[in-house]
Length: 463
Image (cartoon, rainbow, N blue to C red):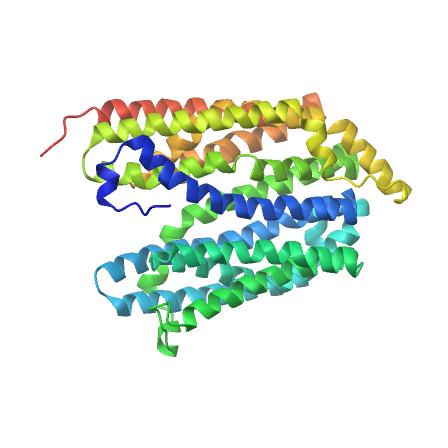
């Protein structure tokens, strides 16, 4: 893959640029998505569908910890990139040191609180009935790896800030491969059940952390910190918080969504519906990876040309990105509409000797997963406009509209809908909340994006 220089962002054809930027971004997202997807297939086939539901209960906690590490990483990495560009290495070192201290303080505090209130937290996140015991096993073991996960997520963004994308890509691949290998050994070979699934996840975090630790202690990194760099500085901490807040807010809403869905679905259909949502949730992460890749590839192109006041190229990049993403989203939509039952069956064991309770849940999932999956992905072809529109405002540095539009689908529309509609339509109300939220968020984003294009991007280019 040829490297795209900053000058090329303002010269090369938009379509060609977008492919160059989107492909590596898609690969990175694919690697992470495959980890979650295949891990769920292994757990579902080797342990059972209740185990998938149990992992789904713990996901909001894992997402929030990962988001915390990403927020500290992204916030600090912005400072580091600018500091290195300005040849201010001391500020870069102090920032990295402060990131390490913040990550340690935040993650250790969360571990202590998480272990102290474990029996209260799990039921609140939907770990009720037969889900409670396996969820508790998974939760406690994974919680031990929380500081490691936080450091891994933070460190990966810093590697990118140093301009070392290949090392960052490797850091993403290691936990994926490690988790799958350890899943096979711990669950299938050693028959450790839920304990094996949890230790495989924690072990994959550790493998990633060790690689990142090696990177920063080797000659590959120019950030060689000392103890003095670990002392928190108010201005750096404040800037890390403000820049990383968008990431943390976005992921916090994802965690809240999982919490609500697990509880609402358990009340409506016990363990079976939670397992259905767990499968659909994995597909939401996996199936749309190329769409998210186009969105990530769009960001630097739009940002560079906006800064260069080449508004015609900005408009072209918006239109091209929406077109590419819509084509990909439509293909995903077709596949999910045609093969929902076959997709759901991948996550379930066909062993006739499994316990009666597990067999009953499997049969329930197979009979109930088809229509929910179709409803959840019903508006997929139009989400390109919502994603690209929100990304545009992020690319041009307009943080408030970027945050509001990013949160619009889940925060402003989906959460209220899923709290209201099931009261009138039961289980159907849960699933139709997805496409309704997609349509409403797309309409709102389309309005603001169109207004932005008319008022800002059609203005004469200044010299």
